[in-house]
Length: 460
Image 1: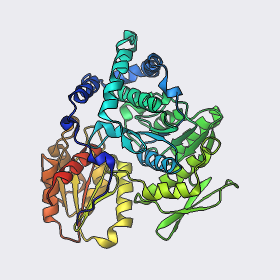
Image 2: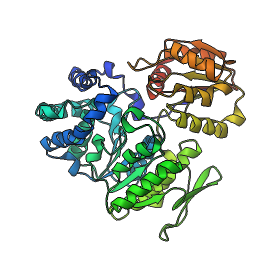
Image 3: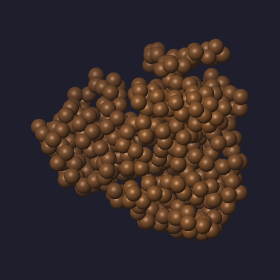
């Protein structure tokens, strides 16, 4: 049985099939900044000018980031889901809400939304001229902008032009030196921190957490999702040094299971317990939902979000590609887990949500180069009946043959097949699965996006 979910982002065509030639030309220009690859050493050397460069771009645009209040969300995993929940609750409360996330699944316009509606092609074309002028006017000493920085300029300009009441913005990489950190957030939220982007953020959780803590602001609240001690202690230290009021899920904010939903409680005497459903699956999403409630509570001096709006937002949040169910018999699920920590969380969520209802696991996996293939496969492959190794069309996707060598180490007894096309891998898995089995597609949001596109076109 196919499960259809109405979501405006997933009805967009792939970028190359957008009918507006002017939009396609702008997007080609935006992506041209990715055609200038930087080594980890070059990226590290460039850190000192990243914020100065973004500041110069925004100054040339008359500082759009100062024309709307914002919530900034960093973290290694769960930050996109937290942004989605915060945005849904603010929108349910009647606020015109901007949302900026990355990467996208099918279409670049997904990244920049107002009230869950993606930016139009016409708006992208209209904004391109001033942004291009700002970039062309950069001092050569600041080096070239990145594609992410260009996209961030589009988002900030769009939110300012359209007059959003508030924007919820996801950090790209790290936080302290990220382009989004040009904002002065009313509230900063830090989702769970784990190992990722180590060539640029550092090899230890302490170094990575230091980057994430860079989004905190003096005299303003910060919300911290559950963390391992090494990361938590760094964020606590940075918050204390700044004078940021840090509130922690698991300490100041707690959730407990009530029926199919959760009950959120707080040490704040002005917050009565809130019982709500959470649309997104998994206990990790309940942690994220609790962080979102804490963030909304911290916004009260500026934006009052009623309890009914919180319930409405959390119970209806859609965040494609994260434990998203596409069909029920067999169960077909996609999730963008791309490192060991997120794969561990995915395994726990599957055990809790699906284990009683499925017999065998068919695992379709594709990862990007440089990701922890051993960690991801070690978490998921040993319990699979069969593993289907594949790749997305993204330029950084790892070859299935590379992943096969990892499989020989982590799950040598598991049957493996290799597929160069995502659709062929999913088709093979569905063909081998019984109605009572689970087909799980994971390892990369690029892979998930191509699966969603293939599924949308599939006649089944």
